[in-house]
Length: 190
Picture 1: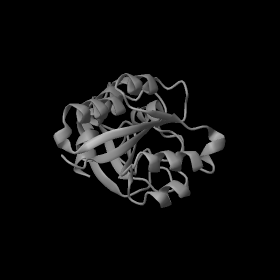
Picture 2: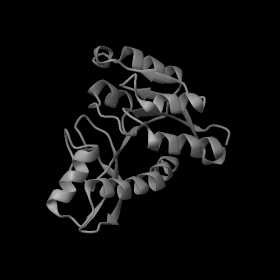
Picture 3: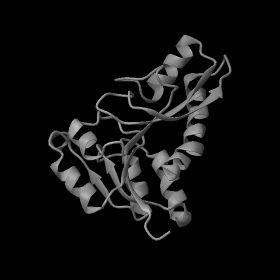
Picture 4: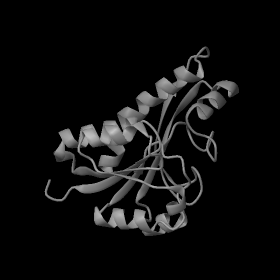
């Protein structure tokens, strides 16, 4: 494809969704998507090494710089980013970034929103809440990002049936399979 869409992926940890996307889009240029930058709020995030091994440049954003966003916005512009993909990024996206990229920031949440969303509802916290409630379904929600946690317009949801005996870790594994199988497809389609 002559002009692939350029994406930046934001992470806070290991970056398993970022890895799936980078590998997919590097191996399939016909998808028309190129990962051009990985952004993390943690210098120790395992996803940074993974990205470096795949030749993806990275930027670590410090909390003090997050308030103004000057360095971040400059980097996103320098890499000509078309879409920002949040993949386990835990900081609230500030209004300056939402305004700079309206309807161009996408997040994946490990539950079927509006259930189990909002501040503090990430990772194991979500899966423990699903278990505690006795839900027999969980899943993923891919949504646009606004200035509030998990409140942007839903793009896609997929559910998985749970076993009543599933632990939070087993729920997490089932949901992660959905994430890895679907997030890159939705990004390609956007």
